[in-house]
Image 1 (cartoon, rainbow, N blue to C red):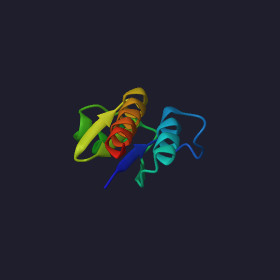
Image 2: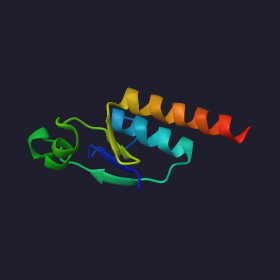
Image 3: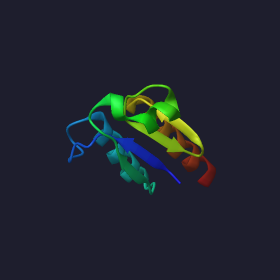
Image 4: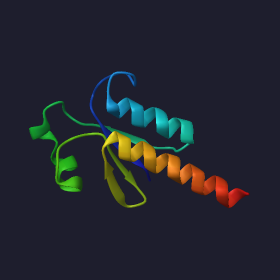
Length: 87
């Protein structure tokens, strides 16, 4: 299962977490959303996954990936790899 740990911002246009959510939808990847508290000190689950308290964090295929830029690049790479396999 793919899980996106993201901030509680109610829209997908105001933060890096929304950028990742939009990229996941574009890629057609079903995912579960976990909204974390605004305060980094209360993000224990994210801290245990990555060793840091920043979001977004994407759990994909048993791996936790941090940073919206890295996540979007990974999704683009996976889409390219899938496209190449289909040809």
